[in-house]
Length: 332
Image 1 (tube, rainbow, N blue to C red):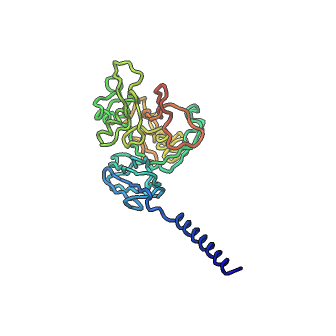
Image 2 (cartoon, helix red, strand yellow):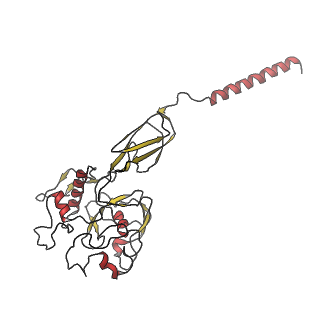
Image 3 (cartoon, helix red, strand yellow):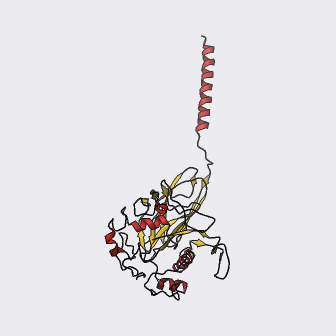
């Protein structure tokens, strides 16, 4: 091969190499104009919020972690705005600009904390003592949150101080008194009581509605356009799952004190020892969670519409919604 041909091939090879190098260099060159996204975080009440990494802006697909730490008088209740989560810490992937509010609330006073987050329990009963139609099938329920519950049934004194009247009075009942549990209360009465408690304690009202049907009106529903806002932190009735989890107190026995019916008198007022009357709250032994009168004395409303149990694992169940008739169930 002549020297001229070698030069030509060398030139072609050099040009090809130069082209490939330029092409690869151009292909792999970082993009300088990648879109930047911002994360704006505000908070309520007292507490601190951290973002890792903490930067002025983030790129598409970047992962960040939010953490909230309440002060000693508050609790963290969740992230709101462009996200809705109670996870803490909370991991996010950036896909857009985010405006987020970290909500803290004052610690509920006089309430028992039920540590249910991450817990699973068997709801329902296959016992021969159970009412099969409403307690089966036994199924697994999992919670992703903790909640608070009053250790005592609401008394007539408490109810009167909030609502202004005692529904037990004037009906001929002998068991009237401030320390006795309130009864003759409808589900709607209980919901309105909870809303007023929330207002007085500075919490969100969980039940919203457009009108209240008074006693002299004929209405399809007592609370028109009722909605239950489970994402709000405020007073409400427990769901049936929450109530049963709290009532069991961590046990799987027939009763929260064990399997022996003979021990019932130490924990509950019932037909054999109540003289067919209610009794002052908190006079019997509590369950393992510090809750009193979870069996007996009076029936206790739960938040759910009447419905059948699932036969598979459910998470944070709230019962059926928007049924044609407002049917509610109570637990005993």
